[in-house]
Amino acid sequence: MIELKNVTKKYGKYTAIENMSFKIEKGEIVGFLGQNGAGKTTTMKLITGLIDATEGEIYINDNKISTKSKKMIGYMPENTPLYQDLTVREFIDYIAELKRLKKEERKKEVEKLIKELGLETVENKLIKNISRGYKQRVSLAGALAGNPEILILDEPTVGLDPKQVVEIRNLIKSLRKSHTVLLSSHILSEVTQMCQKVIIINNGKIIAIDTPKNLEDRINKNIIIVNIEDPNNNINNIKNDIPEIDNIKFKRDIDNNTKQYEIFIKEEYDIRKKLFEILPKHNITIIELKTAETTLEEAFINLIDSEGGNEDVGNNKEGI
Image (cartoon, rainbow, N blue to C red; front, side, top):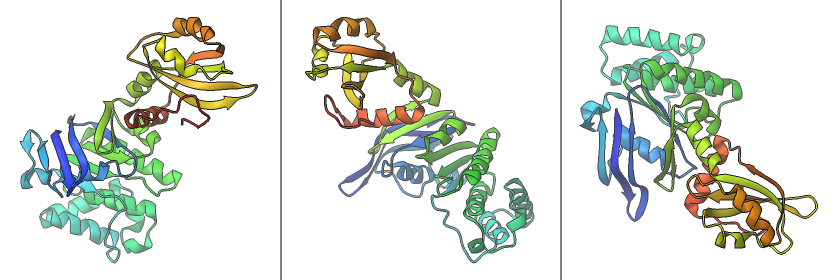
């Protein structure tokens, strides 16, 4: 349904997106995750055709992006840029007209969207006089006008209160049967509850594509938590004896001179037995050793840190 092949976007000397490739199948709801400035909005604008790629190709339904393919896409920009002096009904009707729906078809479409998005109580109010939650619904109605096969939603719940977040989240989940959805967010709990697949980007590059559960499991298998007494600060030296260790990161100080570390393991090796053998040889006493139980949020942070090459080993800085 949507495919990017080696897409790069440059603004002068600045590279916003670099060599990005991924594919989204029909009917999927996919979460696009990244910190502010990671390149999420740029990528979405590329897919909608609002801006052109510097290099690479974008396909919609196996065809290169074109005026025809753009009609298949409904776009909900961040921060709900709406016409404040139109009523809710007038705005939806205007967007439907822009999408070239005929008068009778447009009338039915406006009625349907007002009902489906729960806008009946505000349909005749000026947009500037309705709440942020209703404005998000109106923006979503604009994206849905014309029943596009693909929806691109940029931070659809930003700035909403908890009740409004749940309402918008449920609306988006209900779209799965009839639409393919790509939504950006930096709120990981949303992605866990709404999306079948997650694309994580950092500094304009993809660093992971997987299901939320697989991302958590993948990180869990590759991290061991150890609480140790290490009076001579020898923890970093064990990497010479255990080559399967990829990185060691300080987590926190615990009572009675005990410290906690995360030990990141290459691939899927089980080094627990080796740790019990090697640590005492370096005058390190093991107080507790366990595999990590990582949330998607921690997986996200670990992936970002790993991409950035952050190594806080043997010091007193909080690793996470």
